[in-house]
Amino acid sequence: MALELGVNLPVGADGSRSSTASAQTVLAASVAGVDDTLAADIMRARDWRHRYPEYFTRILVAEAQSGPAALQIARQGLAAARSHYVVVAADGTQEPLPSAVTRRGLDLRTVAVSGHDERVRELVVPHRGENLRGLALLRQLDDWVRRGIVEPTFADAVGAVVRNPDWLDLRGHTFALVGAGAQMGPFAQLVQWGARVAAIDLPRPDVWKRLLSVVRESAGTMYVPVHADHEDPVEADIPTRAGADLMTDVGPLVDWLAGLSGPMTVGNYGYADGVLFVRLSMAFDALLEGLRSRRDDLSVTYLATPSDVFLVPMNAVDMAQERHSRQSPLIVAGKVAHAMSAGRWFGPNYGRGGVIETPTERFGVVSAFIVAQGPNYAMAKRLQRWQMIATRADGILTSVHVAPPTRTSSVHSNPIMAERQRLTAYVGIETFDAPTTEAIAGAILVHDLHNPASPANPANPLGHPHEAFMFAANPGGRWRVPFDVGSTVPLLHEITGVRLRAGSLIRDLSAHVPGLDRLPGLGRLGTSTD
Image (cartoon, rainbow, N blue to C red; front, side):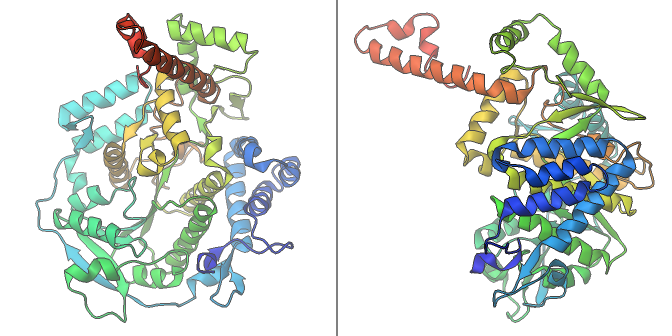
């Protein structure tokens, strides 16, 4: 029962909480009046677990038609979600989601822990065993752009932070981080730059010990939420008394954050498996709505996943198509595989439907879903995307950054995802280490807070709301590689499997034929990397 409490899906007519039914209800409502045929198709969809990318992509195409259409879909989707999802009380009763802000289960108070180290005064990005800064970092940015790993505006934004180190002085600014202990979050960078961080994470002592260790060796301050009925803890006791669960404690957390000094930037870096991720996204939505009603100094930050569907600039399409026209061994082999498989393998990155035209613009469409991640992951991320589109339209500075594929513990715990990251390197996708992703995500946030010309600033008009996602994107090269990654991984997986099986055979035979494994090429068959 404890897992049911707080923000949750409603109970359906059959007595179950169906994430599929909930997603279809909300998604269909989002496009009502924009594409009624799509709305009907969503409600009739079957095999949702495997076909969900088709419908999320069609929603994006509907959003692409115009800025007003994108905003209408975002607002309708959020309105439907807010009326659909519920709060489950301790007695099992359901209440409307907005009641999460007014529910009071506990009182929180603040314990402030400050570091005493020197403030870091320049941008430092750890990358492959080096700490890049200054000219070395600028050269790395140029290299990423040249290889199509990052969008040119990413290098512009990070380069601006390198050239304006005073932007890194975050003293006097508060960041409220949901999932403060997350690997992908900017906690460590923010406190190194002198920020105040209101840390929100679950009551897990190991997480709070790590955060305390980081902040002690920084120039920043961490605001820790502890239960008000606890005595003022000595620092050694903080890890066992700190934390709150956003899904059950939205109201107390709104009260807590409303009382802290600002200006305040709110970011959601939390992650949970399966439907819990959807619930977490809606709990954050309730938190943000509650804070917006009580503070006028808010900005918002959002870390987007690269495994989604995006509108992309046409110069990314042009680069991918130019690469596909080359005669390199990989391109030739890929085209042969495409022909021999009747188009199933190694399709071009922007094939049929890969470019769409609106009355005013042309965009590329990249569908980078990883079906193994599941529809709940896609739904959680779509809710977050809608939140950011609507928040910026409401005049609130909204920093959005498409993060790269990253080696995190959650990826390594999923063998399918870990194998995919390894295989995609063959076609030009670069997977980043977590410390690198954290540092550059922090740099993009700093840029957006300080550069008045940033698209994050709602005073700057955009041609289309989705241009915010194109700016400073780092999809790890996915937008500019010559082949559609989804159609290359299955064949690469088969080739790797054959190679590993052949390697096993060679090792077995070598026991009977000495020296066989030392013949040119054969000794490498049993390795997992080239």
